[in-house]
Length: 189
Image (cartoon, rainbow, N blue to C red):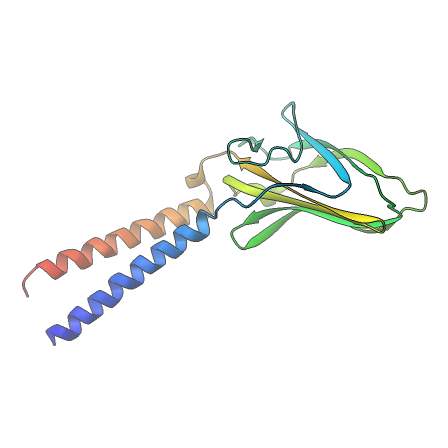
């Protein structure tokens, strides 16, 4: 009976440790490589600072302020190859997933315009995301394609978001379970 109880405690302890490690790996994904590939260029301006794909390291990220509801981001982009039919998008990598930020579908461009500019209004998909992530972008045209990555720092308090609060509660429960399992093992029954 005592041996079975010890096995259960050991299994619970390992499950809690494994769950905590898995949670840590998902929440703190390593930064991927960054840069620009292909015949294109682009910029975006946030709070008066103009960014491009050279903001590609954790020490030099694109900074998005904590108060980002309705943030307007002027942008411009250019491609140097035939661009009569194209599509593209921008996303933020969160662990194994990419959250789309902007997308443009297959469009006809008979005049072969190779540049665009405008103002993008950030929507609420990014409100509950805080931290340092990889930003990805692509533009596929009939004359070629471009791929860009950069690092993006979404400022704010992680505990003020639903995912952050959930992670804190999960970490606290893991710690409590580990401590309780350790205390029970030392107490004579």
